[in-house]
Length: 259
Image 1 (tube, rainbow, N blue to C red):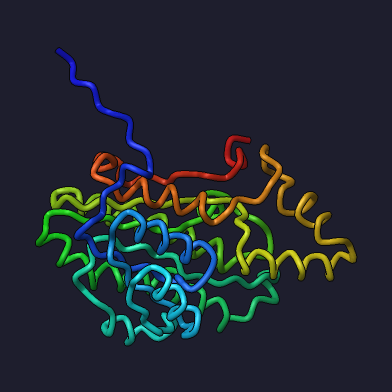
Image 2 (cartoon, rainbow, N blue to C red; image 1 turned 90 degrees about the horizontal axis):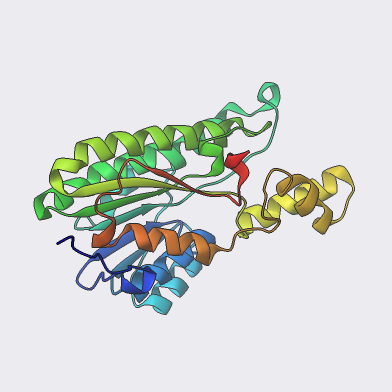
């Protein structure tokens, strides 16, 4: 007789006894992920260069703040190694054509969004391998699957993160460790809100018009994604029920990549 697998939603993800580390957790997607994982029972390490924000979120979730700027590779070793769930979320943006793009800014974005996730995986995987269980969740973007002009560093970094995640999935599979990318479209975060303001000033149009005509032009669902929606996907990927999902890139992009 065929077994029936019960429905598993975010509310069914049990992470009691697990430890999670979330980067860029002081605001936006990272903050939402820290809250979602704590709600599932995990002890959360809240990592951000914003000291006040990290402390505030850690207090909110009963976790531990770590004030670390991931642009400094040496600081990764100061973070905990005994982590069961690693969420690589920290990121930044710079918009400029390639011929005007500051090389130092390009290098910084690669450091924070590619090298730091690699170093964190290298830092935490021995514990996951020893435990026979682990979850790597990399916050990529629709820009890890598609390109837009004037975002050379961001698009390059997200494409690199996609590749790194797939290698980690293949290497981690014999050890019970999964690795996946979550690929949202434009999320209502401080990073995106700043871009909206910049675009409005550059084009001489209103904020709402920027959202509709620039940010949502390629999506079928005409609204920004909320951080909680991204966090729900991250939380789902951390459950035992998702143990066969690895090496995947999950678009939550309102139909952008369907076109």
